[in-house]
Image 1 (cartoon, rainbow, N blue to C red):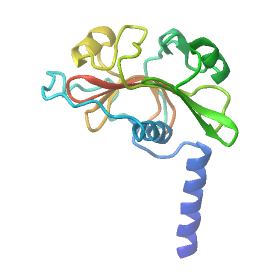
Image 2 (image 1 turned 30 degrees about the horizontal axis):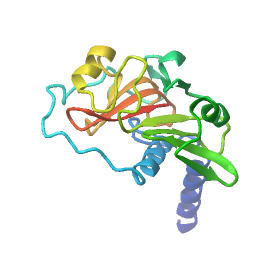
Image 3 (image 1 turned 60 degrees about the vertical axis):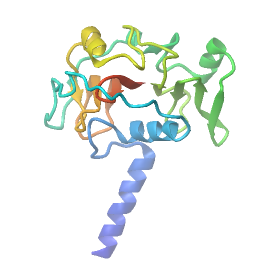
Length: 202
């Protein structure tokens, strides 16, 4: 029995490192959570709002759906742009467009992330293309005009009802996702119950 448990644990660790889909909370994938945690550890988080929005108990269109298929609304490539940089751009093109980053992170001799103020462009497992954009201050807005610090009412007026809301009610997601996997693509607005505290595009 101990050998079986050891094998299962080893397989789980391998899958996690390899980026292969695991059973997770569909609202935050393993990869997404890891990148956000890495960024949060090096940045000061904004103060939480004392006022709570009337939309705090918003539900998503596809909350509590069954796993095994994709749900949600496709977000166009044109929507996945921050500061003129499209999701999937190479780090070379990002630096050419925005200039010298405030910070460059490496995995081995490969760039894994670049930071410009409150904008964090990151890849996954040493890939050449940028996998995720995280905005943690008002340095940039989404294609529809939402910035960190904006109210949930503004998000709702521009994006409508979320495709899914996190179990803790602290993020709204718009896009396509497969429950219980890392298959997530779209825009997430993390909030404090009143205002947006982080924008994640993936």
